[in-house]
Amino acid sequence: MVFSDACALLSRAMELSALPGAYLFCGSSGETRRLSLFMAQSLFPAAKELAADFGHPDTALVVPAGKRREITVDQVREVIVEKLASSAYSGGWRLVVVSEADRMNQQASNALLKSLEEPPPKTLFILETEAPDSILPTILSRVQKIYLPFSGIEGEGTVRDEIEEALAEPATTFAGRMRLGRRLAEILEAAEEDEDGAGNADKRFFEALLAAVRRSLEDGSVERYKAFRRIEAVEAAARQCGRSMNKEAVLCRMADRL
Image (cartoon, rainbow, N blue to C red):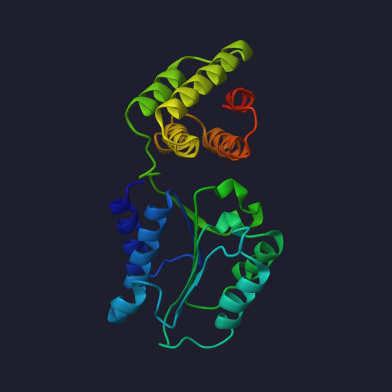
C-alpha cells in the first residue's frame, strides 16, 4: 500500500470513529515512521508541533536501546504501562508507538501483550517493524496490519543490476540454487575489489539484495510467508558474512532458502 492510500485509510477510520486498539505498520523504517507521525498529528491537531516528534504528553515512544539494541521489559513498563496508568493529559486520545517492535525480547513482548489484551479507552498502539514474522503471533493477532513499501534501500549501479539478473534466473532445483549462491558470491567479491573497504561493499551488496527480495513482498509475486522467509534468509546471511565467515558458503545456504 502506498503512503497516501495508508493515510486515507487511517483518516477514514478516524472519521468513522472506527480506529482499532492497535496497528502494525510494516515497511521500511522511514515509511513506517512517517505514518506514525501522521497519526500523531491527526490525533492531536491542536498540538501538531509537539506531536511531530512525539513530544506531546499523551504520546509515548519506545525504541531499542543498549549494545544489543533490544526493547526490554523495563522499557515497556516505564514508558507504556506506567504512563497508561494515569489519565490522559488532554483528556482525549493517547498514542503509544513501538519502534522496531521485532526487537522486543520475550519479557517485553509479554508485558506489551497484556496492555493489548486490555487496552485503556481511547488509546492507540502502533508497532513499527520491517520483520513482522519476528513478533509474537499472539501480538500479531491483536493488531490491524498495514503494509507499506520498503523504500530507500537500494544498491547502486552494476551491483544492483547484476543481483537482479542473477535472481531472475529460475532456481527450482538444488543445483540451480547452488549456482545462484556462487553467482552472488562472485558479485560480492567483485564489489569488494572495486570498493576501498570490504565493509562498505558488503553493506551495499546486501542492501541491494534485500531490496530485490523485498519487492516480492510489495508486488505480491510470491506468497507473503515465503516473502518474509526470503527476507529473513538475506538478513541472516548479512549477519554471518559480517562475522567473516566463508561468504560463498553463506550465500549458497541463503540461496537454498530463497
